[in-house]
Amino acid sequence: MNRFAWVTPSTIEEAVGALEPGALVKAGGIDLMDLLKEGLIAPQRLVNLRAVEGLDRIEEKDEGLHVGPLVTLARLAANPIVQGRYRALADAAGHAATPQIRNVATVGGNLLQRPRCWYFRSEAFVCKKKGGGRCYAHGGENAYHAIMNNKTCAAVHPSATATALLALGAKLRIAGPTDAREVPLETFFVAPEVDVMRENALGAGEIITEIVIPYPPSEAGSAYLKQGEKESFDWPLAEVAVLLERDGNRCKRAIIVLGAAGPVPVRARTAEAALADKVIDDATARAAAKAAVQGATPLEQNAYKVTIFEAIVRRTILAARGNTA
Amino acid sequence: MSNDGQNHADRRSLREKDDDEDGSDVALPGASLRLSRRRFLAGTGLTAATTAVLEACKPAAVGGAGGKGAEVAGPGQVPVTLQVNGKERTVSLEPRATLAEVLRTDLGMTGTKVVCDRGACSACTVWLDGTPVCSCMTFAMDAVGRAITTVEGLSSGGALHPVQQAFVEHDAAQCGFCTPGMVMSCAALLQRNPRPTLDDVRTATSGNLCRCGTYPKVFEATLAAARRGSGGSSGAKGS
Ligand SMILES: Cc1cc2nc3c(=O)[nH]c(=O)nc-3n(C[C@H](O)[C@H](O)[C@H](O)COP(=O)(O)OP(=O)(O)OC[C@H]3O[C@@H](n4cnc5c(N)ncnc54)[C@H](O)[C@@H]3O)c2cc1C
Ligand code: FES
Ligand code: FES
Image (cartoon, rainbow over all chains, first blue to last red; front, side, top):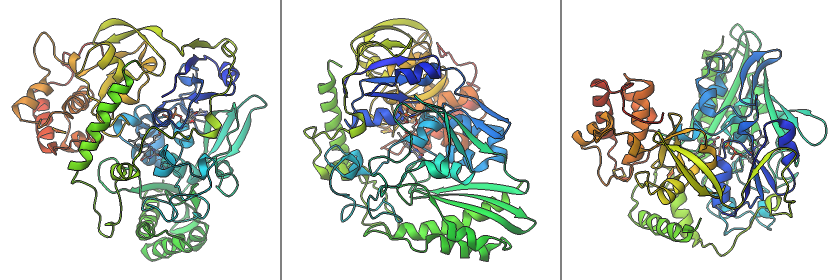
């Protein structure tokens, strides 16, 4: 690990001011610690957001649920408002990582963490994400890699909260050297075909200051399910978040998001269309789940993930129906 | 970190040994082709020789002064005061130091174990303001101004914490490497929930890996300590 300075701003303006080239924002520090220990980043300074006032609130007001980027995964998971109307988010946060990590990891950092592809994370492989010429997962050890949109880079997006927040229609408030801006999460993530070196559109010197989730419509429910290899903590083989807007038994609108499927969270639009205006039952959920994995392009070792996704999509749709307020 | 090289070498060899003995790679039906992360790393013949620093984060020439009013410490040694088990300890550390390193190396408190050094096993669990965290993933700078409780701080006046006592009575340690972390997770659970169910104990220890597989004894011991009513009355100092 290289040596770096530790900067402690107390306002957002000070934090933005401290973000000169070579500086990185630090929230919980979990992903940064991993990258530093692996020698993948060598910042000159870490700008610690923990002393900046007002970044760790959870409040329902104005447009819906306002979540500060420094809210930990543990607090999100335990918050009664989140557990109620924003259930997919509570369950995503509560099933990510370990209790110890959730006590420290923040939702902002969770959205922005780098992928866990073992070639990317290993200093020995200069893959496309590090400016190299190839994706080592292609023709390599790719059991945990992407089953969709995996032609350029086959790393999966690692963020559980991204999967849920995308289904819930969240947007980000961002401060930076120029004007503050708002970005829907829908357009925040960057596909490898656009720029393989990054996963999102956060610019240099920018800080996420708030995550805003609109009030869910009446008669809506959401759910998040994750399948790992073991019962206690694990990274997902598949994770799915669903928001269902209902009119009685019928599905008025569905949003279905697949995490751990592609390099950025995947909206399963064919599946959403398959469910629209249908009575939500086992048969329609099954049909939507089939549609969700249609066109998957698994690699040599991960076709098993397609089957898992199909099952988890079906179960999450039915769970979201059950969670309808 | 003056002895970084030495420590790291030790940990590496420990990890390699673990690999050899590891019969526990997850095998799911139809998953026989898959590798564990450990096996993968062993297979790459990973050395520290090549370092591909990510483009965005390459060291850049940075001016010495801090950004507008924000406090700057380091990158060299910084004197800080940590509150460990109720006592103030002043140490000199670089901002890159982890809490685990400072506890074990600078303060000589080796009760806290480091196993994976990546947040994935919870062997290094300590409490910050009463909340369990991985000390290997915590910058010591982040612990300044917070009450740090280590496994050494659980016992009081020579008497074991009820969870420790129950671990002894129920034979809840085999090799013992995961034990300090297990104890910290279980004692924290009883602190916030004096009457836990088996499921509560399972959840509280879901991040604690035990290579020896002594989970049933850990659960048994923790439930026994709870029955004895250890919860809020623990002697833990500094939380
Ligand atoms: C053992 C283990 C298991 C895990 N399992 C899972 C899992 O199952 N699912 C999952 O989703 N995650 C998992 N994680 C990842 C973990 O959740 C993330 O590393 C963590 O959420 C990152 O948050 P942080 O606050 O620590 O971020 P940091 O490390 O502080 O920051 C991460 C990145 O975000 C930037 N950043 C942070 N906050 C802001 C902000 N407000 N504005 C601008 N930039 C910012 C930083 O500059 C950095 O680039 C696991 C981690 C470990 C160690
Ligand atoms: S040593 Fe810290 S989590 Fe494994
Ligand atoms: S007792 Fe050996 S690792 Fe748990």
